Image (cartoon, rainbow, N blue to C red; front, side):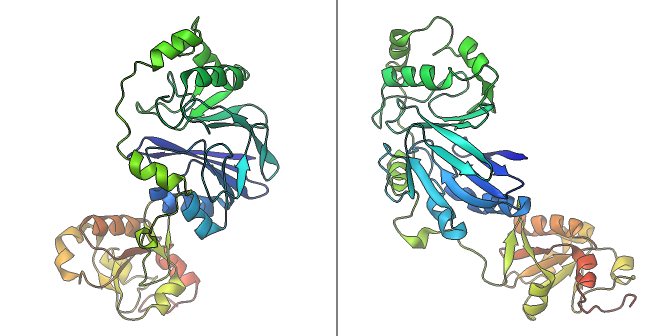
Length: 357
């Protein structure tokens, strides 16, 4: 079974795509964004997928790729265009190449014009294509920097993308209006730059008079992406919590395992957000835990030492997940949820105070 996820970076309006083979447990990420490494690795872990490689549709000018950082954390390979000029690639891709993930694969099509090294990735059954900035929904990427050429882009899109089957779904690298996908048939008919009776001269005239300012992050993003996202100083890498072995979830919070909490020592504040009858009920509670029902949490923030880590606990880990979010929003910097709550704590055989044996 094919696993497909479309992920979004709101700062740059960038789409990242995850494609996975569920049976073989292998995945690819197309156009990953540096700031979302935790999100993407959490999703891979929760879906039971190993990241085989990251793929770049082109050298981006509006965000920094996560390719290098993902390689450091997962061992994934970095794939990009042979004509893109990036150093540090594990594999340089050219037109006609194939990228395998499990039993599935992507076909590589060269679609230069937005930049000289633009690639489009087509799923093996031609049901989906990932067009980067070569073709956007009812638009396309600009052609006025990074060796761009309107004539080359027009020919690329017509020959390599709009020649795909009509039903093929198209997924761009960006969208600024909240649109998520299109199809070959739609873009043939309705794209104002490529559709209808337009020709290469019409397209070039349109593109040569856009008058757009350069992307704000261009001077930072392009040099970084020519290094596959490796920072010029590793001091700029995202910080990971050091007070306990934690796991970032796709839901967007840190979790701690029962054994890790048991081993972490007395410096952690355990906040139990259940009601008093649950705290003193059959499941019992963790020794030393502070009873602070979720409804009272906001009013009782002053009882917590902001310099010490906090672990939130409830019956199943659901209410305490919300408590962890509330505490983080309140400015506590070291907060994690006990995944699975007291049910998991008891099932793992950890000691409790009170409760039923």
